[in-house]
Amino acid sequence: MKQIRWITMLLLMAGTSMAQIPSLERIEPANWWVKMQQPFLQLIVHGNKIAERDVKLEYPGVTLLKVNKVENPNYLFLDLNIDPSTAPGTFPIRFVKKGSKDLVFSYELKARNTGTKAQGLTAGDLIYLIMPDRFANGDTTNDVIKGMQETTLNRDSMYYRHGGDMQGIINHLGYLQELGATALWMTPMITNDQPQASYHGYAATEQYRTDPRYGTNELYKTLADSLHKRGMKLVMDLVHNHIGSQHWTMKDMPMKNWVHQWPEFTRSSFRAQPDFDPYASQYDKDIMTNGWFDNHMPDLDQSNPFVRNYFTQSHIWWIEYAGVDAFRLDTYPYNDGEFMAAWGKAIKDAYPAFTFFGEVWVKGVADQVYFTQGKTVNQHLDTQLPGLTDFNSLWAITGAMNDKAAWDDGAVKLYTTLASDYQYQDPMRNVVFLDNHDLSRFYSVIGENKGKYKAALAWLLTTRGIPQLYYGNEIGMKNFSAPDGLVREDFKGGWKNDKVNKFTAAGRNEEENELHDYVQKLANYRKNNPVVQTGKLMQYIPQNNVYTYFRYNADKTVMIVLNPNTDPVTIDVSRFKERTNGFSNAHDIVTEKNYSLSDSLHVPATTTLVLELAH
Image (cartoon, rainbow, N blue to C red; front, top):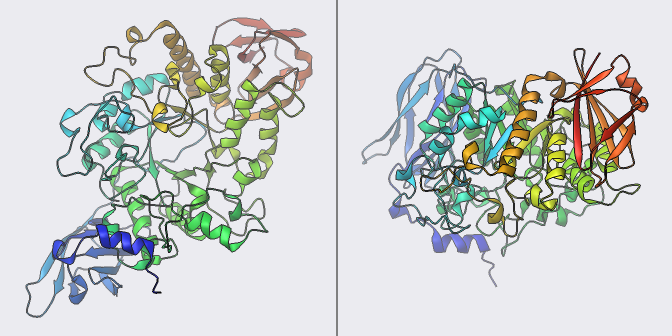
């Protein structure tokens, strides 16, 4: 019996017929820049039977190297070379067919963006993560866009859109800056024209357009410029692994291997081990990397050079156009490793100061390390990935706060996790966090224990790496991710009709103000003191379930003592003389109290002391 592939049937049912496609529907990227690091540019052209036409272009410095025809006659891929001497300007690209009127696209080559861009993230930054639909609604006119597949707006439902947008975020940049944040990461902003749950952003239907329910491309650039004027940075969330089922290339696929195809729907195993398991079967590797993330999220075939070029160029386009400073890479282990390494090198070559970090949701430090650059654990290739989301430090702080103390449990998990940092090329590039848009809120995970929560926040803001706050961490937002929508609630005060405004002290209750002020104080101390950004770290084996470590440089020494126990403890300071010698006093950064560095130090229950040492 003839086998019909599952994805092909799906597209035949939902696809676009040739008659519905304009003669020249689009060219992407619709513009580029002169004097880019890489002279090669590949344009994707979509139009009704466009492959039946010849391509003509003339512009000084621009050479049409090759016209690539693929399986679908509605596509052409044009290979261009843009000489370094090329001047900015516009020129026509003509699509010619005997007996038919020429189709003409006016292509623009711009001068390079000389504004602030591609700064990269460092351990001196504090990232604030926002889900734009749930943070603030600054423009009610874009809440519902006629013609888009999802037009339901309902703040009472966790599944529908709520109306948050870029203007709402711009309106509250002062709040983020005062809190101490230096970088803004938003879940994906490009168009997700899916019929349901389009608010989360991880099923893209366009690559070069922001979702109009968030705002325009121009407003995205305004957001970047506004951040830069405040000395802050913009982190863009990218998804390499998959696209939305309604992506424009899925409605009329260029070729069969644009996405991975299976005889029937096949989901990824979501187990990263086959990527590095020396005993792994090819079957398990294929399921992991080629299986779909979900039935509405097709898995891209990254062995296809046209796929590689299309997505890589779109990422470079956003850096140059908007001034993006860093990328967060979604579902990193599910990608083709060879492609991601080549992609990473291309980004670094184009923007040497630019950085990116990958979402690597695994248990086991070595499992994390495998995906980072440098071939430090016998990887078969250099991944080119500078850093990652440090899930194992999250498991460690969770264990420190919730587990009963034992040889391998409790605060010792923090010690043993960081003791494994020798495997990284540079662990300071890792992003540390307590929760995010996919995880239960940490305040709920530790039983809404305010003392434990503050103790964990102090660790987050003083340990090694790049700390990340999830919106609402600073006011103790709660809930478990069952389902995810419960941890994606609106930030109250972001909508005009909200009864309370958590962006202001008057709108917060006593506990929320206490937490906000605590985070603000430590975050701004961190921002103003390089010692807890890039200083060296020395840690001591926990005793009595108390974890002590130091951040130090030539100018300052900070002693951090984390006591997750429900009882106060007294520790012998003489044990730490390697770092305390020469200091006689300690200043508590939070309470402003001063302590004498005598033979002992009293640490209250469920508390982290952050002490700047003094002579």
